[in-house]
Image (tube, rainbow, N blue to C red; front, side, top):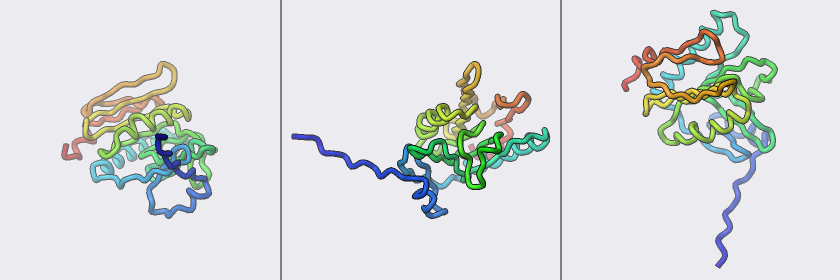
Length: 188
């Protein structure tokens, strides 16, 4: 007996993606659409604190980089289409911005792990971000109370820190994020 043929998912184009309802939270990996869950209060608290710290640092230094929180599209590939919405990103090449999205890899990305699908951040997105040319990728995991820093330049780093650590942002020479200040705002 022959095995049953599995139906192949429909491959989505950029035009189709742009016609989805704006209130639908989606990412596309190699043309396949994946729905995203809404973030929790804990997720949004961490995101807000990191966003403000990064924005203030760049503003205080007179930097030319942009900081964006989700939802903001990043098109990593055209064919097959790969579009992600990182929780937080820094983009230093303004030519990658077209008014709708970032076309190409941001310099720095932070993903805050959702309890429903941690492998998405630890495996799938790590693979895509590294191969697309993201310089630094942090995985913030509230359940494990850990931050995994992946720095893909020079002597590549993959280091885990606890939530009570002060962590260096490697794409900058003097930026450190104090996670113990952030976790004081959480009930963890």
